[in-house]
Amino acid sequence: MRLGLFGGTFNPIHIGHLRVAEEVRQAFDLTRIIFVPSYIPPHKDLEDNIEGQDRLHIVSMSIRSNPNFDVSAFEVEKGGNSYSIRTIEHIQQRYKTTPFFIIGQDAFNEIADWFESYRLFDMAHFIVMTRPGAFRPGLEDILGEAASRFYETKEGYINEKGNSIIFTSVTPLDISSSMIRKMCKDGKSIRYLVTDEVEKYITAERMYA
Image (cartoon, rainbow, N blue to C red; front, side):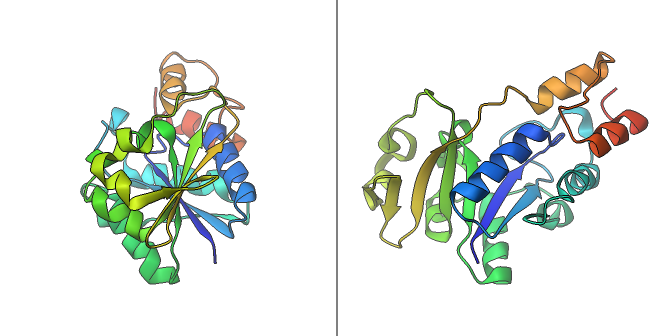
């Protein structure tokens, strides 16, 4: 089984998230992509204090029409700071496979600062989503001395454990969760930026108003 892990605050999840997940799934022949909403992200502020269960519910609504998408409540139910290494360990133990961790280029550029970052590349493959024409730093600039563990390949890099870092270009939809939250506060429609069901739910619950 080839599992993709796609983590984030998803505050809220929008069609940009869904589209890139589908593109990555097809490009790398992934059996399933598991969305993992964080409880408390250690590297960014969680704006508007939207509870993890609410964001988990919105993700579940957003993906229910796609049989290749799934959602994990692991980080929300665990509580506290959400660390990717713990989620990866959980997925490995549950599914007995090495997952493909899906991450944007901006986040990947800061991965050396993540909790137990030195272990991440021994536990998972990494698919780094880039935008056409966007600047991509060298691996040494991102990982420092740890980059010496990797060998360059046509798609990216591979380490001595056989785990890869692969860079892939995705459709650059100019949508962000922060933009959606602001539009809600300003009383503007968010239709077609999120799924219809999520748009109705957010509006009815006045989640970001």
